[in-house]
Image (tube, rainbow, N blue to C red; front, side, top):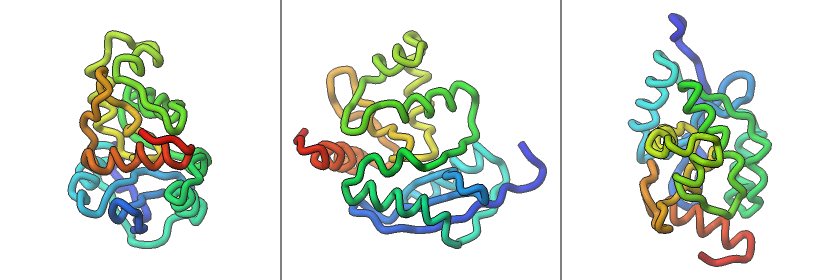
Length: 176
Protein backbone atom coordinates (compact mmCIF):
# COMPACT_ATOMS: atom_id res chain seq x y z
CA UNK A 1 0.00 0.00 0.00
CA UNK A 2 1.16 3.46 -0.80
CA UNK A 3 1.59 6.04 1.96
CA UNK A 4 0.26 8.66 -0.45
CA UNK A 5 -3.48 8.33 -0.99
CA UNK A 6 -4.71 7.33 -4.40
CA UNK A 7 -6.72 10.03 -6.10
CA UNK A 8 -9.44 8.96 -8.49
CA UNK A 9 -12.22 10.68 -10.40
CA UNK A 10 -15.81 9.75 -9.64
CA UNK A 11 -18.72 10.26 -11.99
CA UNK A 12 -22.31 9.10 -11.74
CA UNK A 13 -24.11 7.97 -14.89
CA UNK A 14 -27.68 6.82 -15.39
CA UNK A 15 -28.51 3.25 -16.31
CA UNK A 16 -31.76 1.31 -16.70
CA UNK A 17 -30.98 -0.61 -13.51
CA UNK A 18 -29.84 2.23 -11.31
CA UNK A 19 -27.30 5.00 -11.29
CA UNK A 20 -23.73 3.78 -11.67
CA UNK A 21 -20.61 5.10 -9.96
CA UNK A 22 -17.66 5.22 -12.34
CA UNK A 23 -14.20 5.50 -10.76
CA UNK A 24 -11.20 6.19 -13.00
CA UNK A 25 -7.64 7.41 -12.69
CA UNK A 26 -5.76 10.21 -14.45
CA UNK A 27 -4.44 7.69 -17.01
CA UNK A 28 -8.05 7.09 -18.15
CA UNK A 29 -8.19 3.58 -16.71
CA UNK A 30 -11.35 2.33 -15.06
CA UNK A 31 -10.62 1.45 -11.42
CA UNK A 32 -14.10 0.62 -10.15
CA UNK A 33 -17.69 0.52 -11.29
CA UNK A 34 -20.57 0.11 -8.90
CA UNK A 35 -24.05 1.27 -8.01
CA UNK A 36 -25.16 4.41 -6.18
CA UNK A 37 -27.43 2.43 -3.87
CA UNK A 38 -24.43 0.26 -2.93
CA UNK A 39 -21.89 3.06 -2.56
CA UNK A 40 -20.72 1.85 0.87
CA UNK A 41 -19.79 -1.51 -0.71
CA UNK A 42 -17.81 0.30 -3.42
CA UNK A 43 -16.02 2.41 -0.79
CA UNK A 44 -15.07 -0.75 1.17
CA UNK A 45 -13.79 -2.42 -1.99
CA UNK A 46 -11.64 0.60 -2.87
CA UNK A 47 -10.23 0.69 0.67
CA UNK A 48 -9.30 -3.01 0.52
CA UNK A 49 -7.65 -2.66 -2.90
CA UNK A 50 -5.93 0.69 -2.50
CA UNK A 51 -5.94 1.76 1.13
CA UNK A 52 -6.47 5.49 1.45
CA UNK A 53 -8.43 6.76 -1.56
CA UNK A 54 -9.57 10.28 -2.37
CA UNK A 55 -12.49 10.48 -4.77
CA UNK A 56 -12.97 13.73 -6.64
CA UNK A 57 -16.42 14.18 -8.11
CA UNK A 58 -15.65 15.12 -11.69
CA UNK A 59 -16.09 13.60 -15.14
CA UNK A 60 -14.00 10.59 -16.01
CA UNK A 61 -12.55 10.13 -19.49
CA UNK A 62 -15.29 10.54 -22.11
CA UNK A 63 -14.16 7.28 -23.77
CA UNK A 64 -15.15 5.39 -20.61
CA UNK A 65 -18.60 6.92 -20.23
CA UNK A 66 -19.30 6.69 -23.96
CA UNK A 67 -18.37 3.00 -23.96
CA UNK A 68 -20.55 2.28 -20.92
CA UNK A 69 -23.49 4.15 -22.43
CA UNK A 70 -22.93 2.31 -25.71
CA UNK A 71 -23.10 -1.02 -23.91
CA UNK A 72 -26.33 0.03 -22.19
CA UNK A 73 -27.76 1.02 -25.58
CA UNK A 74 -27.03 -2.45 -26.99
CA UNK A 75 -23.55 -2.00 -28.46
CA UNK A 76 -22.25 -4.81 -26.29
CA UNK A 77 -18.66 -4.80 -27.53
CA UNK A 78 -18.26 -1.10 -26.66
CA UNK A 79 -16.92 -1.99 -23.20
CA UNK A 80 -14.12 -4.14 -24.65
CA UNK A 81 -12.14 -0.98 -25.40
CA UNK A 82 -12.17 0.24 -21.79
CA UNK A 83 -8.77 0.04 -20.15
CA UNK A 84 -9.00 -1.27 -16.60
CA UNK A 85 -6.59 -1.27 -13.70
CA UNK A 86 -7.28 -3.12 -10.50
CA UNK A 87 -5.49 -3.69 -7.28
CA UNK A 88 -5.90 -7.10 -5.71
CA UNK A 89 -3.78 -10.20 -5.53
CA UNK A 90 -2.20 -11.84 -8.55
CA UNK A 91 -4.85 -14.58 -8.36
CA UNK A 92 -7.71 -12.06 -8.24
CA UNK A 93 -6.29 -10.14 -11.18
CA UNK A 94 -5.99 -13.38 -13.17
CA UNK A 95 -9.64 -14.19 -12.45
CA UNK A 96 -10.75 -10.68 -13.39
CA UNK A 97 -8.72 -10.78 -16.59
CA UNK A 98 -10.18 -14.17 -17.43
CA UNK A 99 -13.71 -12.87 -16.92
CA UNK A 100 -13.15 -10.40 -19.74
CA UNK A 101 -12.59 -13.35 -22.09
CA UNK A 102 -16.06 -14.82 -21.54
CA UNK A 103 -17.93 -14.00 -24.75
CA UNK A 104 -20.66 -11.41 -24.40
CA UNK A 105 -24.10 -12.92 -24.13
CA UNK A 106 -22.86 -16.23 -22.75
CA UNK A 107 -22.67 -17.67 -19.28
CA UNK A 108 -20.33 -20.15 -17.67
CA UNK A 109 -20.40 -22.07 -14.40
CA UNK A 110 -17.84 -21.25 -11.75
CA UNK A 111 -16.36 -24.74 -12.15
CA UNK A 112 -16.04 -24.46 -15.92
CA UNK A 113 -14.49 -21.03 -15.55
CA UNK A 114 -12.00 -22.26 -12.93
CA UNK A 115 -10.96 -25.03 -15.33
CA UNK A 116 -10.74 -22.56 -18.21
CA UNK A 117 -8.23 -20.39 -16.35
CA UNK A 118 -6.17 -23.45 -15.38
CA UNK A 119 -7.33 -23.67 -11.75
CA UNK A 120 -9.94 -26.48 -11.78
CA UNK A 121 -9.65 -27.14 -8.04
CA UNK A 122 -9.98 -23.47 -7.10
CA UNK A 123 -13.72 -23.10 -7.67
CA UNK A 124 -14.36 -21.52 -4.26
CA UNK A 125 -11.39 -19.16 -4.63
CA UNK A 126 -12.64 -18.20 -8.08
CA UNK A 127 -16.06 -17.51 -6.57
CA UNK A 128 -14.52 -15.33 -3.88
CA UNK A 129 -12.43 -13.40 -6.42
CA UNK A 130 -15.49 -13.00 -8.62
CA UNK A 131 -17.41 -11.59 -5.66
CA UNK A 132 -14.56 -9.16 -4.97
CA UNK A 133 -14.54 -7.81 -8.53
CA UNK A 134 -14.34 -4.00 -8.31
CA UNK A 135 -15.44 -3.37 -11.90
CA UNK A 136 -18.88 -4.79 -12.60
CA UNK A 137 -20.14 -5.08 -16.18
CA UNK A 138 -16.75 -4.34 -17.82
CA UNK A 139 -15.20 -7.23 -15.92
CA UNK A 140 -18.32 -9.32 -16.47
CA UNK A 141 -18.73 -11.22 -13.22
CA UNK A 142 -22.45 -11.43 -14.02
CA UNK A 143 -21.67 -14.07 -16.66
CA UNK A 144 -20.76 -16.68 -14.01
CA UNK A 145 -23.67 -18.83 -12.88
CA UNK A 146 -24.27 -21.92 -10.79
CA UNK A 147 -23.44 -25.39 -12.12
CA UNK A 148 -27.18 -26.08 -12.37
CA UNK A 149 -27.73 -22.95 -14.47
CA UNK A 150 -29.13 -20.90 -11.59
CA UNK A 151 -28.30 -17.28 -11.04
CA UNK A 152 -26.08 -17.13 -8.00
CA UNK A 153 -24.66 -14.20 -6.07
CA UNK A 154 -24.04 -10.83 -7.61
CA UNK A 155 -22.75 -7.85 -5.67
CA UNK A 156 -25.27 -5.59 -7.37
CA UNK A 157 -28.16 -7.94 -6.60
CA UNK A 158 -29.72 -10.77 -8.58
CA UNK A 159 -32.28 -8.51 -10.34
CA UNK A 160 -29.40 -6.54 -11.88
CA UNK A 161 -27.58 -9.74 -12.84
CA UNK A 162 -30.74 -11.00 -14.53
CA UNK A 163 -31.18 -7.66 -16.31
CA UNK A 164 -27.56 -7.68 -17.58
CA UNK A 165 -27.83 -11.24 -18.89
CA UNK A 166 -31.19 -10.51 -20.53
CA UNK A 167 -29.82 -7.27 -21.99
CA UNK A 168 -26.89 -9.10 -23.57
CA UNK A 169 -29.10 -11.90 -24.91
CA UNK A 170 -31.72 -9.49 -26.28
CA UNK A 171 -29.11 -7.32 -27.99
CA UNK A 172 -27.98 -10.48 -29.78
CA UNK A 173 -31.55 -11.35 -30.74
CA UNK A 174 -31.87 -14.15 -28.18
CA UNK A 175 -34.03 -14.60 -25.14
CA UNK A 176 -32.94 -16.36 -21.98
